[in-house]
Length: 331
Ligand SMILES: Nc1ncnc2c1ncn2[C@@H]1O[C@H](COP(=O)(O)OP(=O)(O)OP(=O)(O)O)[C@@H](O)[C@H]1O
Image 1 (cartoon, rainbow, N blue to C red):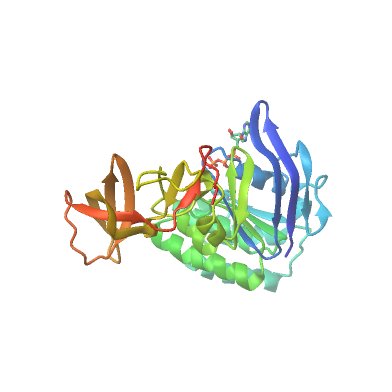
Image 2 (image 1 turned 90 degrees about the vertical axis):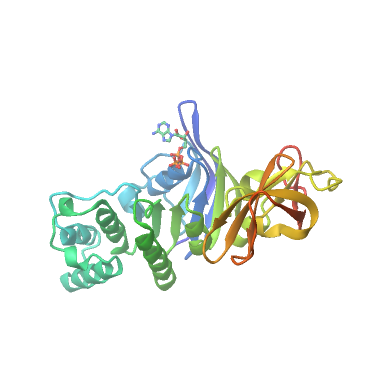
């Protein structure tokens, strides 16, 4: 497919910053997940790449072409939105065929049939192909929307929380399927999600946005293990990283204002006595909700271990991440 390169990309809406000075390279065949809270600029980034929104400044190259003056159709990107966008008067099959019938693609009939059948199978909607789009459930409509993007082989797929309206089982199935499609087609995908598991399992790279700025870009592992700020550290990981005063366990590490401890980096059986507030038994593991000097701490425990709420557990930090007063990582 194609590499996408953003250089100095900015877009404001009146006084509101949409995105500011974004430099980002989405390698050919990469699955890049954008993370950030609401309003961080994720959707705006997708809309700028697709051409639905015009740049204030900067440039966007797709496959080496500067697409600044191209229409969305010329850019050859496929976009899937959170809200499904189907032609209600057409059947599922007609909706899926629609992108392939565009005069630009001019796909031969047998090829259209083959693609529609294949995509319908992947999305588990083969039995609904001849239903009107309006006769589908919300989850089915969303699958057809995804299908309309997948029948094409565009330069890049732009997906804005495409699985968020689906139930848990289907979301898991489609997560695996999307990843497989990406690997087998070598597709370049830019994907927005709030779902930690989607981000960790599907992404080859993660871009973290904060108030329109790209604050870190790296592999999910780099972002998880080596975040450059409290903000980035808090975006990935479920349960979230524990951010605690640097001196909670004794003398603060040099220069540190806060330490960050992932749940798996809380050593048990040594250190200070924390109160066990609550246990969450999740089957294969248990989450312990602790409190130490008024600070909540979450850690993991063996599912068979016998912890009693109200009792205490000694804990100590293990390989803490250290942050300065501004929340920037110092080591
Ligand atoms: N058409 C618009 N007119 C005015 N402001 C807009 C417009 N589109 C986006 N914005 C503003 O730009 C900022 C970034 O919005 P954007 O939709 O990109 O965020 P987001 O990270 O996708 O959020 P969400 O997770 O809620 O979708 C927000 O402050 C938003 O209010």
